[in-house]
Structures are given as C-alpha cells and as structure tokens.
Length: 105
Image 1 (cartoon, rainbow, N blue to C red):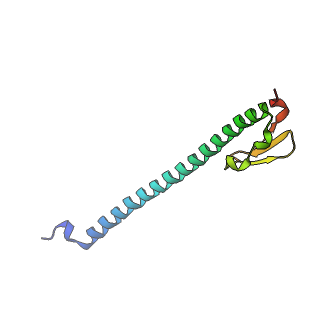
Image 2 (image 1 turned 30 degrees about the vertical axis):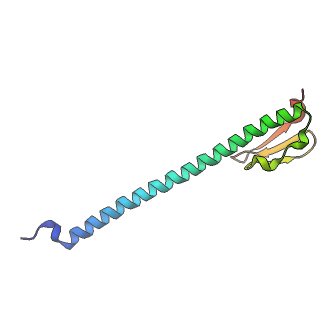
Image 3 (image 1 turned 60 degrees about the vertical axis):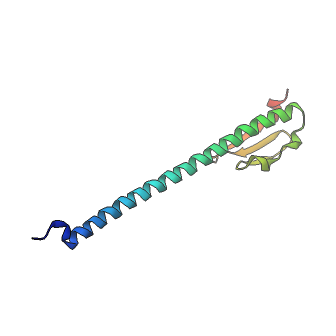
C-alpha cells in the first residue's frame, strides 16, 4: 500500500503551500520596506524644517540672512520671495510662509 506522501498530488500540494508562505513573506517584507522609506522621508523633512526655522532665527538675530543656503535644507524646497518672506513646502505638500518681521528682535 502506498503512503500519502508518495503520491504526486501531495508533493504538488506541499510545493504550493511553500510558495504561498514565501509569497506572503516577501509581500510583508516589501510593505515593511515601503513603510520604512515613508517614515524616513517624514523624518528627513521634519529635521530639515526644524533646522531651517532655528537657523533663520539665529541668522535674523545676527542680521546675516543672506547666508541662508537653501541647498543645505534638502529635501525642503525653499524660496525667498522677498526680503521679508521665506516660503517652503512641507512633506505633505503644504506651503508654509515665514514672515521675517515677526522674528526680528
């Protein structure tokens, strides 16, 4: 009498179960990597935004706002629209405006 494991259908069934487990594992890994990437981007934007605000306060105090280099705050997109207004975009695409008159001491 043949055992159950000797039948070709049983081997096929084991293979399908193993492939299903592997595909679920790869999918979970993929979603984890994507989530980590999103969180990393949020952290980079937040860190750049906090650093920009602190640097602007310091540069306004010493009256050297021209030393502000927008490249150093990547991934923020910074635009100095006039001598008294600085605009930048946050992670979620919101436009924020800094009025330098409010920061002057």
